Image (cartoon, rainbow, N blue to C red; front, side):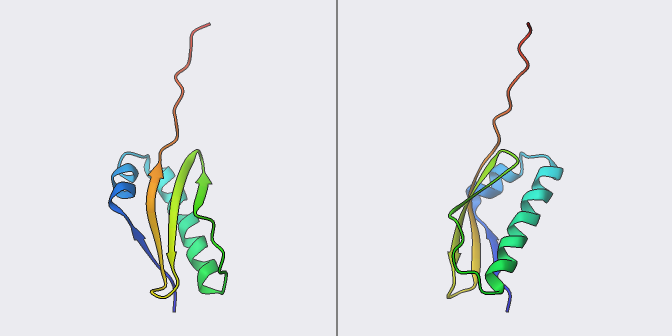
Length: 82
């Protein structure tokens, strides 16, 4: 049986503010982690960094659940005139 992915409230509210392209990339990364868990990987790091976003993860092996607890959006730097 495959691991389910659950998105927490804080993570959901941040994801809603990100571009669809970035959300899709983050979803693919979560799916890859879930697949690794399904095929026996036990040690998943509590944080995952992708495209400047920091994802906080939680794994419940008993329930076969990968939870996206929180997302820290990338910091966008404004161009400074020379």
